[in-house]
Length: 253
Image (cartoon, rainbow, N blue to C red; front, side, top):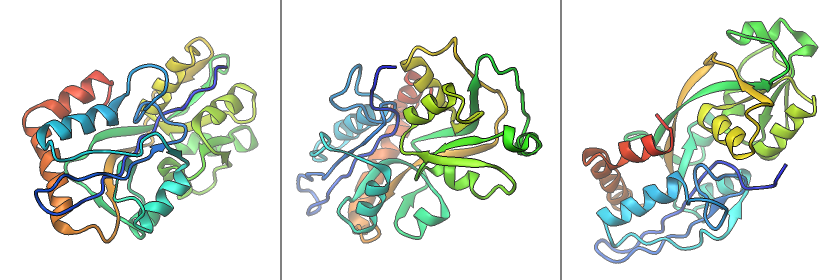
């Protein structure tokens, strides 16, 4: 399979004096194109388009540093240490909320946790109990340091393999028979399967295990007035319909 960055998308916005041009420290997340595909194949994708829309609402918001792609663990560490100010988009977990903050409204978009299986595996499950009942035949693949893994880890009795650092690695493990289920957000699974041209080899089961939201995360010490400026621009995108149009364009909820 062709190697490419997959699905997740982050950006940091640094803040300056009220009314001044703000030059953001930013990074793209390694292994993510649906959220932030800067400099990769295809269109820039959701978060880049979303941030461009924010800049149209408030032209003083500027972004730099997106050329550098960081793994999720590094993104979280940099947010907690205030080397990044903002990050689009992240699932809120208890562990993350203890280290940095989140803007809960407006959400960037909503996701549903689902599982992918190999197309030649006729298994069907309706919930975690069905997977538990499979025992060693029900290994669940999850991506290290992901919000989906954090939720999955709270479910007792599952056999979880979280050794993969990104979603493409897990897709390869699934196809190689090194796990029966790949647990991830629905939009991520769809985009990944389509991007790799694997619609004939991978099925996404209809069962929804959990509903969640991708949010704006921010450094714990970010000045309230700076955060308020970003949030005001986000609310403007909701009011003028831009956010809904972007979500629709990328098949997001």
